[in-house]
Image (cartoon, one colour):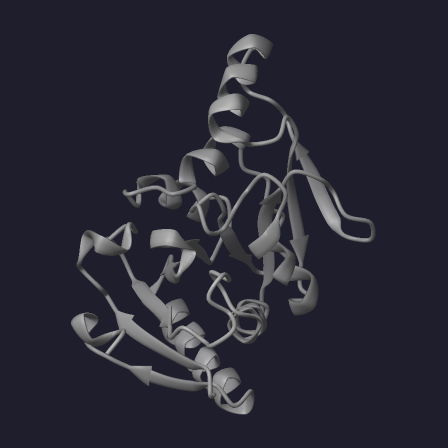
Length: 212
């Protein structure tokens, strides 16, 4: 069965559990037989990561560093006891690492990162120009996870991020956000090109027809 992606620019409904401000693109994918337990099938992961790494590095959160990759340990911002309570409530690890790579295959790690579950809307993928040093505060990054408002994302633009990708409801859709409309235009064109080359059917649809 052919994998199918559906996209919608400047979506407005809140059912996706995503911010509805600024330049934005909603990406949805049809269920693939045999992959019902996967929030993001492998074919979709590949297309998304190849699109994200076209001209950008991607940074994401993980509970551990990985050999041979750019990584930065995020300094804990809360006292030990409240931090322990937070970990018990959220399931997040004690250590949070910001990993960064321009290799699409390595970036696929973000969908299964330790302690930052995509299907539970616990992840964020940031698109950064390769020459830009990206070092926001830990609190800014964690505040951006699963946010319903765009304000935390705007704080990341000032640190040099060009765009970001957030998981939507149940991790079964993705919201792409860009600092500038031109960046969104470029990402959308790249997504179409890579999807076509990968044998993935991509259609632009109205919001209420995304899963039709």
